[in-house]
Length: 121
Image (cartoon, rainbow, N blue to C red; front, side, top):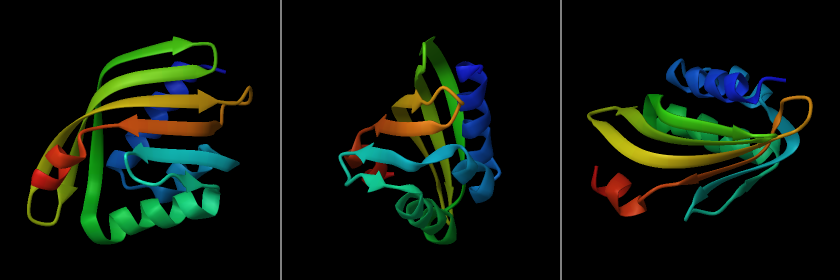
């Protein structure tokens, strides 16, 4: 398993708005938490959230990874998420923490960002 490449490939799927590739990266019981929003628990809940983002708010999201570090099955990245929305583009600094299983699936993902900056665009 190459944890660094798994997360890079996962991030690249967002720019294609490839919900199936994104969802294939998760375990069935994964937890995705955009802090400070409520966590999505399980693949069905995660799919609803991600599909809803692409159906309503965003056409795509480019994850520009600035720094990425790996320690075993933990991957942390500092990135700029560029959200291509209907009428504007928002650049949002984010820190992400990914927990991977031994077979390379994401079992936990936490993103930390300034919600006020996101709301203000």
